[in-house]
Length: 386
Image (cartoon, rainbow, N blue to C red; front, side, top):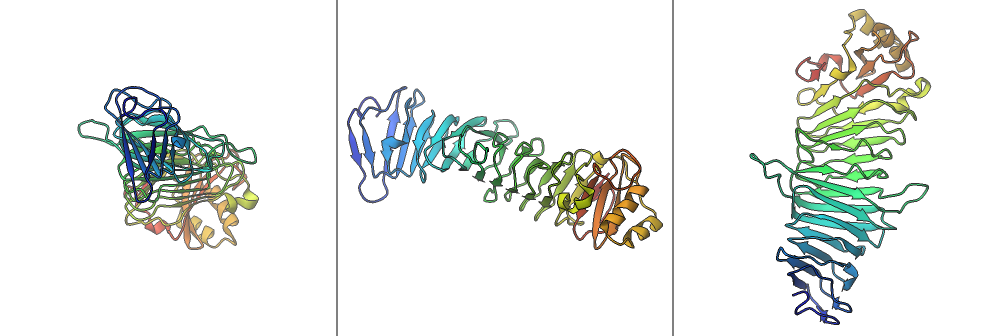
C-alpha cells in the first residue's frame, strides 16, 4: 500500500516467470524515492477512489511490460519502447510521455469523455488499443475518446507523430484530429465501430495523410482531399459511411477510396474542385475503386443539379479520342454549377462543372471516377442520391 507499506528504498525483484505487482493507492502520494521494482511484467496501480500516484514515472518499474492505472489516473512519464501505459475503469485524462520513437497506450473500459495526450521528443508512432465505456444514455451510445499529440519529433520541418495505429474492441467516437503530422492511420484491427450515425471520426485536418485504413465495424469517417500527398482510404468491412470534402487540391494530388465489404455510403458534401491541372488531371483524380451497385450508395446531392446527357451526347463522349476530349464534351453538355455522369473506357465518371467560364474542361472543375461502373448501373434514389 502506497505511503504505508511501500516506502523509501523498498526493493521488489520478480526474477523469473510472469509477475504482477499490485500497489493500492489510498491517497494522493508520490512514489517513494529510491524504490526498485524490477523483473515484474505487469504493474497495477489500483486506486481505492480517493487518490492517485502524483509523480508517476515508468522508469521506477524497470523491465515492466505494462504499467496500469486502475480506478483513477494521472500523467505518466518515462514510458519506454515496448512498454504499455494502461488505463482501466477510469477517466483516462492524462499525458503519457514516451522516451523512444514508438509508444503504446492500452485502454480497458475507460470512461466516456476520456482525453489522452501523447508526448515525447523522439515519438513518431503511437498505438492505442482497448475499449471505451458507453455514454450512459438510454439507449446507450458509444463513448468518446480524444487523443492529442504534443510530441516534438520529426524531420524536414514536420513535428509530431506520423503513424497512428488503433485497435478498438468497443464502439468509440474517436477524435484524432490533432495528429496533423500523421501520414498513416491504421485502425484495421478494430472490431468496434469508429464513429456512429450522428458523429464521424474526422481526419480532414491530417493534411499529410497518405493512407487511412478502418476496421470491421460500421464506421463513419469524414475526410478531405489532401493538398500535400496522394491519399488512399480503405473502409474495410462493415456498413460504413465515408464523407469527402472535395474542394481544394491545389497540388493535383490523387484520392483513392476503397469502400470494402458491406453496405457502404460514399458522400461528397461539397462541390468538387479537385481538377488543379487539366494537362495532368489524372494525377489529381478522385477514384472510387469498388463501388457495388447492388449494395452501396453514392450521395452527390451537394454537387448541384444533374444534367442528364442525351443519347447523342453520351455517344459522342464514348467515341472521343481520349478522356480529356471526353471531358471537354461533358463540360459543353453540363450547365455551370451542375454535374453530369458519363461512361468512358469501361468506367463511369461524375463531372462537376464548377469553374466559371465556357472554355470546356478546365482547372477548378471536379471529377470522380467510379471504376468498373456504368451509367446503366445507376438507380436514382436507390444507389445514387442526387
